[in-house]
View 1 (tube, rainbow, N blue to C red):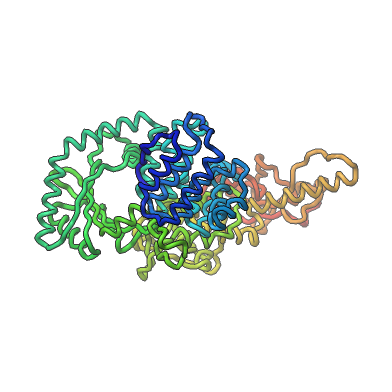
View 2 (view 1 turned 45 degrees about the horizontal axis):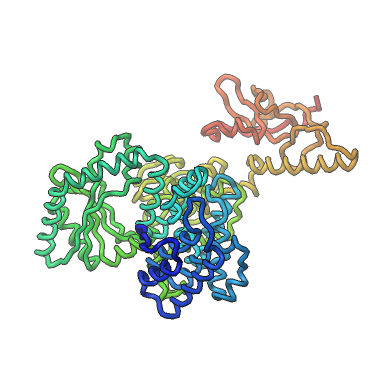
Length: 606
């Protein structure tokens, strides 16, 4: 993918356009070219006289998408699928596609069109499910997601041609889904372009301001960077290392994020430019980091070794920031092969010469695919589960270590509870405390990169609803949720479900008896609750004892046989809540002051 290529041929002349396309992408065989041209003619036969709302020919968008994919040297079937992907709107069936272009193209299009035609805002469960289907489609054929990503990239490049509502939805989806997905696939160029294009639309003033300052910085710092580059060239030559060095401006969206995070104006940021050093081997990378740190003092905490510990998208590089002539200078060091992976990401594994055999792809560079295989059967029934899955797949990540030195990758924001479940579910279920670098930390505290985590367990411990709200990984969320549903009668979701089922049964019973809807009654908690006319007020036993001061909570008015919990207050003794009371569940750290309570069954009805 990469920056947009502008076709020189007239948009009104389809023959010239396809000939220019094939000349530009001349790596395809003669048979491949014939197949691509056949697909183009098939598209033109159905869309030649159609225009987009912007006034441009309808067929330009699929050709631009095809060009993005061809630029990454993807196989002819993927390019053909890109050209044909809008045709489902024109009553062209999958069987027709299969007959003309083969089953492979038909399968790619069936899945791609299901994804592209659905909204991608992730604001509702329906839309979340669309994203889930898209992600899991990657497991079967990565070309589906590369085609979908290319479609979104072309749309954001041409966002001005969309309606205001479509522009807003697309810009939100780019930041929420497409840029993180490009990042997870290792496609740094595409991620940067997607984010910058979205910023240009959502905050044009900030974009223009950053653009001006970057241009000014390049001019002002040209001599400064040239001097730094020459020093590196001289020092590396003395060590017999051949290098290529380029300077680059950081992409606009990352600068914008720094401005917001540090609450600074762009004029107050100094590290807007960076150097990239390319060499021939990993050993040379480490020699070069020594050279750079010998030339300038490194800043504390700014060295990152992504060669020894690659990112889950396969990205490898050494990052450091040094103080050069009183200014911070960021430097990246990597091999040419690592740079190719950083530029093209997973697309570099799916070139047309390799086909689509998963055995040809290095497994350690397909972390997102391996995770998706694990979660393929995940039943997403609520927003919380989906957001947990999405964050784990598309969010930032950290690396933490076991005391034995084993590394675990976790999503940013993960807690020691997530870490415990990552080790083993049995450890997660019994966790009571944790240490980070030898010091006790709260279980609610997000873990930090490179910490050594030690888990403390107790055989009597078990998962809690509070833990469910803290975890960030799908595995921990699923295991805790399952345990609570099976073992905890006070679990709010379980009670809500039982209440809903009870109310449904009562309504059906009433309808059968009277042929009409009953008046609405407050649903009851617990298994097999008593009928509504048997709900009474009884005395409460606190930890089995009578005559302990307690108060019935006014927020939920518990009555026998509602399931109840007791909460210790400063002035009212024990307050008795229904177990599913929302007010009770919003109390922070409530477990510490919750006491065992129950209705006094020996008490007569009042």
